[in-house]
Amino acid sequence: MDVPAEFDHEAAEALGRLVEEVIAVPSRRRDFRADPITTAQNAGVRLNDKTQRLVLTLAGLSASELGLLSELNRTLIKEGLYVETGNPPLMVF
Image (tube, rainbow, N blue to C red):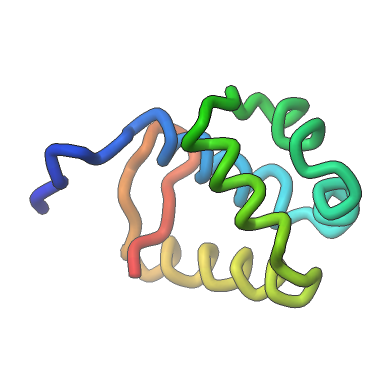
């Protein structure tokens, strides 16, 4: 599999961690919607310009959209459609 030269491994790992450890957990999803920046930081996501934009983009999704994103992530990983970003992997679609 070819990875684009501009692929940002650190941002992908942060996004994978955010989806797996925050968005996939209903109680943490509520915390995220209330205070996305602090919740992401508490999950170990190091914020820079790019990761902050990702966090704020996700924060604009509804609770049901975040749940769907989490479900899609789990399904695609289960089917082997993911990029290994460290731990956890991140879906590919």
